[in-house]
Image (cartoon, rainbow, N blue to C red; front, side, top):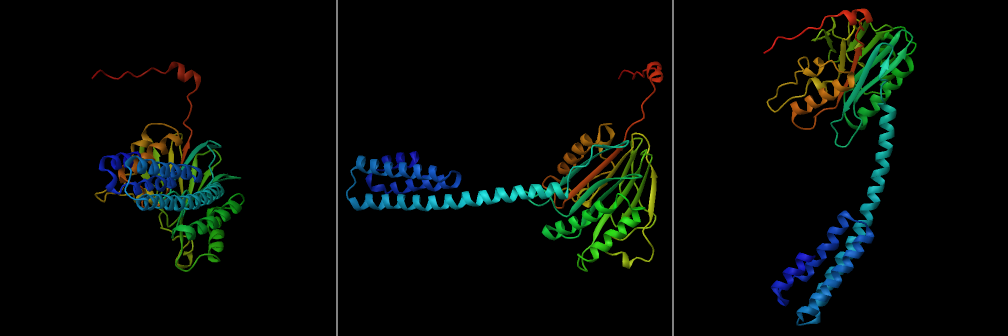
Length: 351
């Protein structure tokens, strides 16, 4: 409004610029409330009257037209500001509900369970969304702890509904089920009543023993986990690939249960294809097995922070698909006090 007043003064009475003072209340409605819009509109009308009197315009009709324009835009701006504030309150309420739903559906995992440390990260591809079609959960069991990471075929509310169904069954049966194949079977029975014929869920189920020395894996059409041991990473592939949950009727043989040793300091990353299939501008996949995040000896939280940054840096923009990462790490073996006191430090040779 100051710029318009200065321009009107420079151009003179015949410029017809005073009606542009209505830009003030129009912009105020975008960022401010009703009170601010009314105040700015009143200031615009006052400026219009002052400039008209200062310039001694030829006819009252011109001043009345400019004032009517400013007043009309002010009224429209007040209405628009009222509607915008109402929508913002509704959006805030929906956001609060979505945050609660996110905590119920994908809550935090325990930082440590028995002798295993763990951490999780979830990156949604939907703008301003915190949940999607990827899922994860950790449940304490009588023989250790059981984990699941999965990816629902489908996005939006359909994917969220299927993910909620899988997690609900897993949380119910993972405590007392005899083994991982039984958990997968119970999940499939529930999904058979909810999913359509075209839907399925890829999932990886894992069971960590009480002492953390062994991990059992059951792959249901899911990307293989990454085992990092002794600074080297390798993907743990099942001998017989398993079909996703919801498609077991098409399989000729049952899913293969894989058991791997899990030594002190070893790390196991369970993830969804949003991580393994993340591409850069050249179309190259993210080099998950060669990621330096696993070699710094840090805890799971710091490793996943580093890994998340590397994935986003590799892609160069927001992810095109949801991505979930669940990292477990067996605590490194502690040296006995006597060994720690008598251990001879190793000095590196000068460069």
